[in-house]
Amino acid sequence: MTTGKDFQGKCRGLSEAAGVAFWILVVGIAVEILWQGIGRRMFGEGGGDFRATLQAVGVECVEALPGIFIACALWNLAAVFERMGKGVVMDAANARDLSRGGGNVIGAAVAALAVTPSVLGWIQDRPGGVRFDFEWVSVALLLLGLALTLFANVLRDAAALRAELDEIV
Image 1 (cartoon, rainbow, N blue to C red):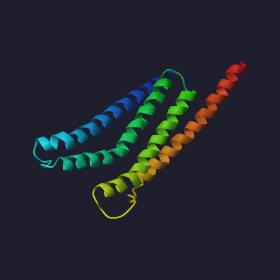
Image 2: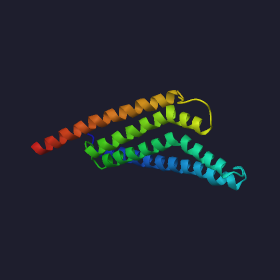
Image 3: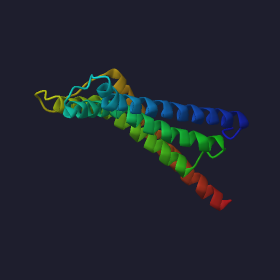
């Protein structure tokens, strides 16, 4: 049964793990950006030109884009598992957050495949237009995001059917 105490305990554990992973990722990204903007200049590595530091921060932000999307997906999934840990499984809010999580995973894949390589090329004055950095991990992320959005659609339909059955009963 999906509302059993064992299932709810596992969901609460997954919610906490996703929350911890979210904060570790956010802190790691923030530290990297702050290091580029402040730390390197403090230790004389940033150069005398503030524009070079600004460019380094910009490059770091662009490189962090897939991680930012993954952090958002973890936040959405933590909310889903938190509600499921309370026994709320077939719910429109779960479907919404699962769909948002899937969309964020898709965003991470697209950022890793096309956005980050293209923008980095433009920032670093490399000739050429849109660039693609084809990696199997990014393709797997794309498929995972599509699967999450598909599951969200199934959950949305199940929640609607459950609400309709609750009205009848």
